[in-house]
Image (cartoon, rainbow, N blue to C red; front, side, top):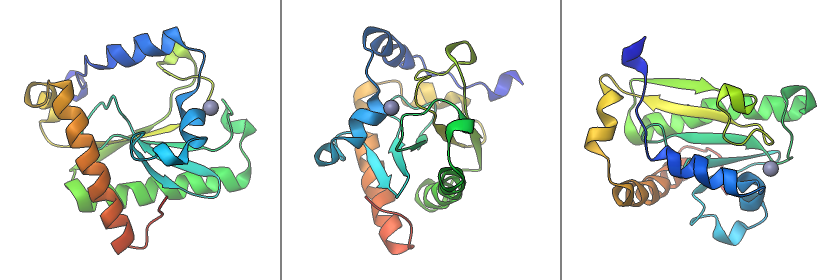
Length: 169
Ligand SMILES: [Zn+2]
Protein backbone atom coordinates (compact mmCIF):
# COMPACT_ATOMS: atom_id res chain seq x y z
CA UNK A 1 0.00 0.00 0.00
CA UNK A 2 3.00 2.25 -0.61
CA UNK A 3 1.00 4.60 -2.79
CA UNK A 4 -1.28 5.49 0.13
CA UNK A 5 1.52 6.81 2.32
CA UNK A 6 1.49 10.57 2.71
CA UNK A 7 4.81 12.37 2.96
CA UNK A 8 4.64 15.22 5.47
CA UNK A 9 8.18 16.09 6.57
CA UNK A 10 7.16 19.40 8.27
CA UNK A 11 5.63 17.18 10.98
CA UNK A 12 9.15 16.78 12.38
CA UNK A 13 8.75 20.31 13.86
CA UNK A 14 5.66 19.11 15.67
CA UNK A 15 7.26 15.96 16.98
CA UNK A 16 10.35 17.85 18.16
CA UNK A 17 8.17 20.50 19.85
CA UNK A 18 6.23 17.81 21.71
CA UNK A 19 9.41 16.26 23.03
CA UNK A 20 10.39 19.58 24.59
CA UNK A 21 7.20 20.15 26.55
CA UNK A 22 5.08 18.19 28.99
CA UNK A 23 2.11 20.34 28.02
CA UNK A 24 -0.99 19.15 26.23
CA UNK A 25 -1.89 21.46 23.35
CA UNK A 26 -5.49 20.20 23.32
CA UNK A 27 -6.00 21.14 27.00
CA UNK A 28 -4.16 24.40 26.37
CA UNK A 29 -6.51 25.19 23.49
CA UNK A 30 -9.53 24.23 25.61
CA UNK A 31 -8.49 26.70 28.31
CA UNK A 32 -7.95 29.63 25.92
CA UNK A 33 -11.16 30.28 23.96
CA UNK A 34 -9.97 33.81 23.14
CA UNK A 35 -7.22 32.21 21.04
CA UNK A 36 -9.53 29.85 19.13
CA UNK A 37 -8.74 31.40 15.74
CA UNK A 38 -5.01 31.41 16.37
CA UNK A 39 -5.22 27.83 17.64
CA UNK A 40 -7.32 26.78 14.61
CA UNK A 41 -10.23 25.60 16.78
CA UNK A 42 -13.20 24.87 14.54
CA UNK A 43 -15.90 23.62 16.92
CA UNK A 44 -16.55 23.33 20.64
CA UNK A 45 -19.34 20.99 21.69
CA UNK A 46 -20.60 19.82 25.07
CA UNK A 47 -17.94 17.11 25.51
CA UNK A 48 -15.51 17.69 22.64
CA UNK A 49 -13.33 20.06 20.69
CA UNK A 50 -12.51 19.93 16.96
CA UNK A 51 -9.24 21.49 15.79
CA UNK A 52 -7.55 21.86 12.40
CA UNK A 53 -4.21 20.10 12.69
CA UNK A 54 -1.46 22.69 12.42
CA UNK A 55 0.88 19.99 11.09
CA UNK A 56 -1.47 18.22 8.71
CA UNK A 57 -0.94 14.97 6.90
CA UNK A 58 -3.12 16.46 4.20
CA UNK A 59 -5.22 19.55 3.51
CA UNK A 60 -8.17 19.70 5.93
CA UNK A 61 -6.74 17.31 8.54
CA UNK A 62 -9.02 17.66 11.62
CA UNK A 63 -8.57 16.40 15.18
CA UNK A 64 -11.56 15.47 17.34
CA UNK A 65 -10.86 15.18 21.08
CA UNK A 66 -12.84 14.92 24.31
CA UNK A 67 -12.68 17.96 26.59
CA UNK A 68 -11.33 15.70 29.35
CA UNK A 69 -7.62 14.80 29.32
CA UNK A 70 -8.02 11.05 28.97
CA UNK A 71 -5.75 8.67 27.10
CA UNK A 72 -7.89 5.58 26.54
CA UNK A 73 -11.30 4.93 25.05
CA UNK A 74 -12.34 2.90 28.10
CA UNK A 75 -12.02 6.10 30.15
CA UNK A 76 -14.58 7.87 27.95
CA UNK A 77 -18.26 8.03 28.87
CA UNK A 78 -21.03 6.85 26.53
CA UNK A 79 -21.91 10.50 25.87
CA UNK A 80 -18.33 11.33 24.95
CA UNK A 81 -18.03 8.32 22.66
CA UNK A 82 -21.31 9.05 20.90
CA UNK A 83 -20.47 12.70 20.44
CA UNK A 84 -17.06 11.94 18.94
CA UNK A 85 -18.60 9.55 16.40
CA UNK A 86 -21.19 12.16 15.47
CA UNK A 87 -18.37 14.69 15.07
CA UNK A 88 -16.60 12.36 12.63
CA UNK A 89 -19.72 12.41 10.49
CA UNK A 90 -20.15 16.19 10.82
CA UNK A 91 -16.46 16.76 10.07
CA UNK A 92 -16.78 14.70 6.91
CA UNK A 93 -19.82 16.72 5.90
CA UNK A 94 -18.10 20.07 6.47
CA UNK A 95 -14.92 18.98 4.69
CA UNK A 96 -16.87 17.51 1.78
CA UNK A 97 -18.69 20.81 1.29
CA UNK A 98 -15.50 22.86 1.71
CA UNK A 99 -12.85 20.99 -0.22
CA UNK A 100 -14.54 17.99 -1.92
CA UNK A 101 -12.24 15.14 -0.91
CA UNK A 102 -12.53 11.82 -2.75
CA UNK A 103 -12.24 9.86 0.50
CA UNK A 104 -11.21 10.01 4.15
CA UNK A 105 -8.85 8.24 6.52
CA UNK A 106 -10.30 8.26 10.05
CA UNK A 107 -8.18 6.81 12.81
CA UNK A 108 -6.62 6.85 16.24
CA UNK A 109 -3.14 6.08 17.55
CA UNK A 110 -2.59 4.82 21.10
CA UNK A 111 0.90 5.10 22.58
CA UNK A 112 4.03 6.64 21.11
CA UNK A 113 5.10 3.40 19.51
CA UNK A 114 1.86 3.46 17.53
CA UNK A 115 2.62 6.96 16.31
CA UNK A 116 0.65 9.04 18.81
CA UNK A 117 2.32 12.47 19.02
CA UNK A 118 0.22 13.27 22.09
CA UNK A 119 -0.40 9.95 23.86
CA UNK A 120 -1.99 11.49 27.00
CA UNK A 121 -5.07 13.00 25.33
CA UNK A 122 -6.96 10.75 22.95
CA UNK A 123 -7.98 12.20 19.62
CA UNK A 124 -9.46 11.04 16.34
CA UNK A 125 -7.75 12.04 13.08
CA UNK A 126 -9.99 12.86 10.13
CA UNK A 127 -7.77 13.12 7.04
CA UNK A 128 -9.29 14.01 3.65
CA UNK A 129 -7.84 12.12 0.69
CA UNK A 130 -7.81 12.80 -3.01
CA UNK A 131 -6.78 10.62 -5.90
CA UNK A 132 -3.06 11.18 -6.36
CA UNK A 133 -2.71 13.23 -3.16
CA UNK A 134 0.59 11.66 -2.19
CA UNK A 135 1.99 14.59 -4.20
CA UNK A 136 0.60 17.10 -1.65
CA UNK A 137 4.12 17.78 -0.41
CA UNK A 138 5.43 18.88 -3.79
CA UNK A 139 2.44 21.20 -4.23
CA UNK A 140 2.56 22.63 -0.72
CA UNK A 141 6.05 22.35 0.73
CA UNK A 142 6.28 25.86 2.23
CA UNK A 143 5.14 25.97 5.87
CA UNK A 144 4.10 29.63 5.43
CA UNK A 145 1.79 28.62 2.62
CA UNK A 146 0.36 25.84 4.79
CA UNK A 147 -0.23 28.21 7.71
CA UNK A 148 -1.98 30.78 5.53
CA UNK A 149 -4.12 28.15 3.86
CA UNK A 150 -5.07 26.74 7.30
CA UNK A 151 -6.53 30.11 8.39
CA UNK A 152 -8.45 30.44 5.14
CA UNK A 153 -9.75 26.89 5.42
CA UNK A 154 -10.81 27.51 9.05
CA UNK A 155 -12.88 30.51 7.93
CA UNK A 156 -14.46 28.52 5.10
CA UNK A 157 -15.34 25.61 7.42
CA UNK A 158 -16.90 28.00 9.95
CA UNK A 159 -19.01 29.63 7.24
CA UNK A 160 -20.18 26.25 5.98
CA UNK A 161 -20.91 25.13 9.56
CA UNK A 162 -23.19 28.13 10.04
CA UNK A 163 -25.02 27.43 6.79
CA UNK A 164 -25.55 23.71 7.37
CA UNK A 165 -26.55 23.46 11.03
CA UNK A 166 -23.21 21.99 12.02
CA UNK A 167 -21.53 22.68 15.39
CA UNK A 168 -19.80 25.97 16.14
CA UNK A 169 -17.47 27.46 18.71
ZN1 LIG B 1 -5.09 17.20 27.39
